[in-house]
Length: 195
Image (cartoon, rainbow, N blue to C red):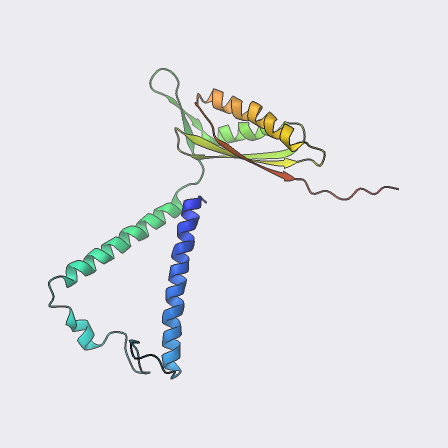
């Protein structure tokens, strides 16, 4: 999940949760007979959220219905934007390659990810490699995860991946640049016994 999408999700969930806690707590407090401040909209067990006079108060105002419709339209657009953001893929389906003839070509994202992972996995000291492409079709970004052997030198492995797998992918796809984030993690292994 992208950073922007997860931030929006967290903010929306926090606001919805806070609203539900406040409203639910207020209803529970009134139902249990707790005394509430004078400005609080509910003041008894049989009280309703909007009374008949409150519901009819704004109907005759000229600005009321356009405002209600505008607010609801904005809420619907925001809800649809949020839903589409959830369905959007985080990984690239394909990369647009400049073939030199003015038309271009497409390389499948999974194929390029597989080649990146295979070549990075062949580096000395790397037990396993995973690659993912994100960003736009014309400006992809790579995320590579390397599982390192206990004896591996991280700096050498990182330089080998940058000079090997990433450089080859950038050149073969005809990209000016291929920004990458490489994460290293050590293999968990048992302690060796010395006798």
